[in-house]
Image 1: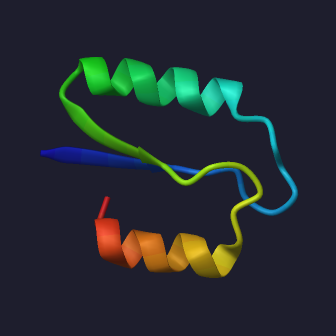
Image 2: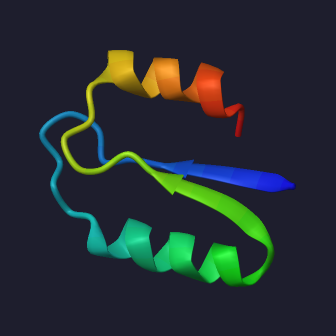
Image 3: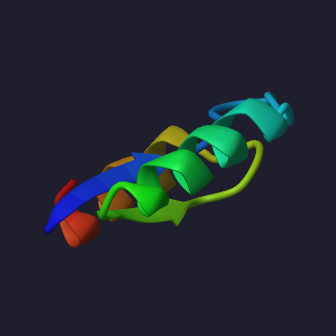
Length: 53
């Protein structure tokens, strides 16, 4: 299955656009995961390795 990992990095807390995109992608058979707002680079790296988008 195709995967997309979404996150707002650093101090960014604007999530509406990412959530809308991930919702649309899930309707087209993508597996999506959202890490939330203000995600650290370290967490993003770990999740990329774990989720393998």
